[in-house]
Length: 481
Image (cartoon, rainbow, N blue to C red; front, side):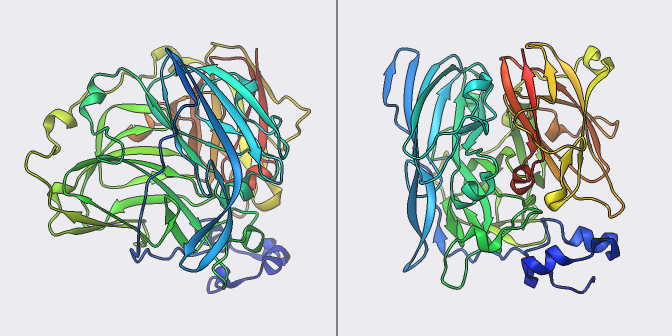
């Protein structure tokens, strides 16, 4: 079994395997990181960046937008157009810029030929506008939602959440970014000019058939659909050309299942400044960062220190995610220095009280393929699994249960809140986990404790963000009242 090439196996053969006769290593090799090996980018196509969505209206502190889910065609390869989905376009979506304290109205429009929802991942908003699987818009329908932004600066995103078709719609292209801005004076010292020194990188992996077509149904895998080809901002074989200077990269893992461990092939270090819910307390100097599906990480990279004119952003296996071509910058360009490295960006701490609080909710993630469960159950839209009071902090324990075959990695996400990680296997979390989070990845056998508080009422989802697992029922509901 260890010599078998799982990437060449048919879906039917995978289904018919007798898992009871497989070794732990065999099962691990069936995990979503290994089923389809990722090809290196050859750097043929310059990436572009999503447009910033223009408001439909602005009146003082009130702003309104229109977001339309629509069908389109995208030419990933010259001369070959593939059917895709996008928001306000053919593929992916625009950047929606919001400000802390703003009153926001969004007109949501479904121009697809199928049901969809609009989920605002990471936004702390009432449950009835969160965009979970019960808030369906049918083809041709539209509705208007309103909410007030009440959270700090962060990079969030929006995507569909129609059960059980989330995985397919995201794979086809439905993903857009949300930037929240605030008045953090120290953060203003960081690169923040969009498309100049502040760049989003939406990383995905997909597979194309012999006709260069994107066809989810041909490649779907119940353990998490992975692809041969890396895309950045929707570009196949991407590359990025810019100046030798200090830049900010906002990285979103919008893949269905693949976890990336990103670094530069010259071993250079960079500053990790923000995670899902906003800034870390201070920049954390690292040489590698892990990102699981739906996680966001912001990093500062000083490319003025690169010798030569090229460096590659690579995955842990050495596969090139993004070739970066550098051109000499003008004198006086901003470079990293001790002032930036020592900036105080936030003040997030796990309090002594939170450390001592008893666990009130336990979440056990288990299984693989279609046999995934949370606490031994599959999603039931008519069942409320947990209850919690608004504005009350509770301690949740999340466990990724090992089984006889070892189990597989699961990525846990809660809607409508940003939580604090108290411990990982009883130990203080790494600095990269010490900011606000809405998603956390767990290896088999791991346990984490998180402090969870909801600032709004409503019914919210919690689930595995390996999208096929979510669609297969690895999802629950909490009612906040």
